[in-house]
Image (cartoon, rainbow, N blue to C red; front, side, top):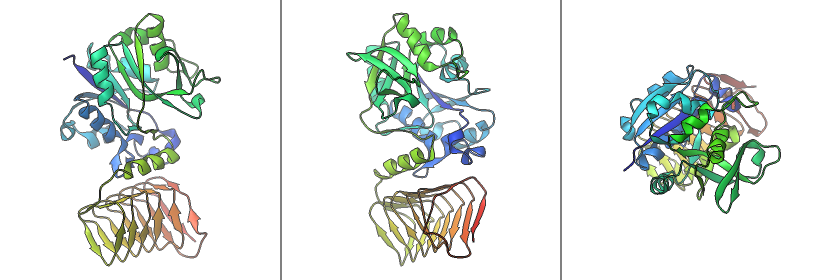
Length: 357
């Protein structure tokens, strides 16, 4: 069987999720209390790809290393590859050339989520041995993506973020390549964005007569680069959870599919799933609504939260209004000293403190 390596890109700056990503790698922001990056690693391992390189940035590389380790907890072997600056996906491929060492590989963007993973795609790539295989999905606004033009299923043209899209078929953040991609990438000039575009590298393969095939996503796919997308990904993942109540539940009501991790305490509260309550969290006199992920060590006292993500160590206390559609960073404190409007929408960075007066 031909060896296929994995390459996960985890070096982007995450500007669309600031201020969270001022102090946190965007790929480590959790969905259903699991870092987005972990879903990508697990998807590759499920597909039998266990020799994985992770592209990291200088300013967030250490926390990615700490979170993932050597990969053994995932059943993988992980090698870290530092990319000095985010100069495009094709540049990332070239940065990883020594690690890839002439083998075919799966490239997975570390802030993407695919419900059905990549086992079918990898199996087809092994069987058909094209020089590239791309994953596509129909989108409402193709101008925000790399877009493919197809002729009876064959990829004939690719363009990055076109003003006049040739189709509504956008490239999902998963690609499979033979070593032919290295020569194509080395021949590129930076685009108007100053980057080496992977779409142009694949187009070079097509122009050179190499075979490029595509497959359309059958389940859902999410790029978690923005708050709305992160919350939607959280919703989609929570939709698939199975109830597990390992924590302490006192005088509380749990409705629907809910995970309460070991060491968590629910007291005088209502939790309406799907929702997940992390280890060591304390929920007291509170309402936790559907599609909410409460991180490890979080405290929610006399407050209501719904359709939100609270990262580890944060606390929400004595609010007179419900928090909705919000993402709170690590060790954030939100408290109330007087009455306020009924609904708040928050994107709050790590270790902030908010007092509502």
